[in-house]
Length: 119
Image (cartoon, rainbow, N blue to C red):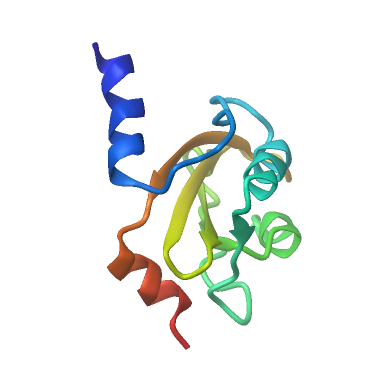
């Protein structure tokens, strides 16, 4: 039942994706390409390394859309994708490698999207 609810929530609550969603464990660079192919652009909300922890600089410098990246625990990182000014997602990854692994993605509310994209 739970497996049915999450896709329905994403369909109803957030921007629609035209292709398949990346699956958990997919290398982030591949998940990033899949989102870009659907018209979602990586978006950098910071002019520098913003929320990058010590030891995660390689991820933050390689992927300019990094919102935050922790250096401990599961080594979770969050990345921002937008499609125009009306749709966006935050992608969460895990893993200590320079290319982390896709964990999940959550749609942004319009208010949250504006907080990242407004000048």
